[in-house]
Image (tube, rainbow, N blue to C red; front, side, top):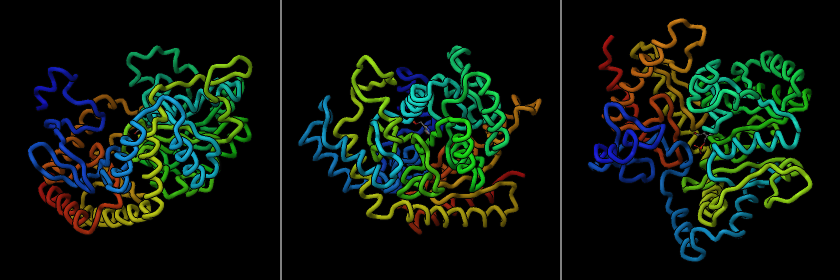
Length: 428
Ligand SMILES: Cc1ncc(COP(=O)(O)O)c(C=O)c1O
């Protein structure tokens, strides 16, 4: 099937997180904690569609609601529908600093619009991100992805001048952030500092516990807005997201996948009411507006799926259950790494489990051999990921695991067996 797809789709796959080595998988369905390929093989699924299926895939109570909304309202109406309000309200009830919320189509769009709102509101141009963090693929944010300091290395097809107002600081380096903010003052100031609150790539480089509070203080000192990208952490870190967990108030919050509960058109931006007023719909003369569109955004299907998924996540205490599964899995992994005396590292923040085989994102731009090391280390991850897949386990890019409420002692034991089988057979 993939061979045929290659004739019509570049490379035959369309997901950045797809495993392509030694060949991509054609998946037939996602259900509960499992994925099934077209050959009927079953895998424990820790990719979780990139994170949103905290309840497990295709969770029946949400699926039933989604089908009934399609039957009653149709998937999109083009005008306001009650579920838009219900979704905005349930987000606000759980994350009170999100006073107002605007639905969009993806996390990428939400990040892109968040910085546009920040510039409109503050009248300043510069934005600052943490090196290595991912905030979607919009022109200005394809900047220092994966490895801090790499700047426009991955920005092919994007004019250099587009990121002229994007700056970065080294993950967790508060003094470094201050220096960037001070430098920006000479250039008209900083509109916003945008961070993934756990650290870049969902905590691949962990930040300290008081890091976000310190960023908040610096934003206040320099008159910059604080944007939390909670595409992964919202509801996964608990009902209040990372902002609730760290008790730090962002001015704007970026949402993705989870706000449609694993259904399509999943993104949104929310925050302080005065700031969010910059995106009131319709193009009217007068007060400056941050231009936002999206014909199919805020449709009844996506909003209802998000609303019911969030309702179930709270009712079932899904973040806690998924987090406990993450703890058990990580504990088992750490034990195996020790037992087989391997130079690997595993750690978790609840349902977000990291394991590093070759530390590709830890490479330094100052390393003269960087360009040779990236493909070599990437290949280690590919081989390890392929071995895990062959043993019936799918991870996110061979270095991350998202657990869900649907995982259980059986899936965890199966996974640890898969890791052990590979650890036993590693060539040294
Ligand atoms: C932290 C973060 N921000 C933004 C995005 C982009 O979201 P989307 O894939 O919906 O465009 C992602 C996607 O994985 C993400 O992890």
